[in-house]
Amino acid sequence: MSLTLVQAWTSAKKRLEAAQVDSPVIDARLLVEAAAAASRTDIISDPHRPLSAEQAATLDAYVGRRERREPVSHILGRKGFWKIMLGVNRHVLTPRPETEVIVDLALKSFPEGMAFSMLDLGVGSGAIALAILAERPAARGLGVDASEEALAVARENAANLGLAGRLALLRGDWTAGVDDASFDLVVSNPPYIATDVIETLQPEVRDHEPRLALDGGPDGLAPYRILATEILRVLKPGGVFAVEIGYDQSAAVEALFNEAGGYGVVTVKDLSNKDRVVTGTKNPLGNSGTMG
Ligand code: GLN
Image (cartoon, rainbow, N blue to C red; front, side):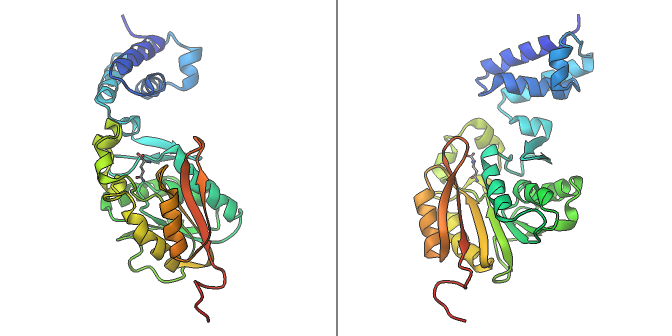
């Protein structure tokens, strides 16, 4: 007797509940859809459609991986972010909805049709840069990452979205080699988890996501100590920056950007009402008191 879509969903959900997965209903649905090549509507409008033996076997393997706490994004190899779909793997941080705050701020600062240059430090999958470029046809970007494997993911995503011509990708150590006053916008979602805290995170993050994209050093703030000064250096006068932070890092990161000469430095909350992004500008008249 073959399994129907609704039976497949129910049994997958039960297995994921037993494995203490956070969102068993949604995850089960996403895995059934992928394994059975079904849309969300199919599951509701055609619940008794049978899965082929091959589809059932694929689903069993997917659920097995999810039971071992592999993220859905790694099983499916993709994740939606803002209005785009991105390929992802274990070499990049899976894009998270809270990071969309950076995209939202950037789009508000740079109206459609405006030509501007953007730098994304720690570009990873390309999520932030590509979401912005997709909506700002006159913009161009540079994405920098320390990981060649991450750059390969960003490169493929840019190509799939038809944005490769406007996103240059460079392997590098943050802003090394980037000229002074060369970008209108600098964005970053740097690693900001304190090293000791990583072991306490859920297995999906701890065991499957790249340490390079998570580990912010002993207090989680090490990257910002470099980035604050460097971002103010590479921004053009009047340019805008937006960096993601951990929920308890607002005061420390604001202070670093203020010390570096940032203007109008503020923290913006995410949809869960947690402090999430520190943003500000570089003085349009040049930096901190130096004339000419
Ligand atoms: N927000 C991510 C998490 O809590 C971490 C992202 C980061 O370090 N940049 O898992």
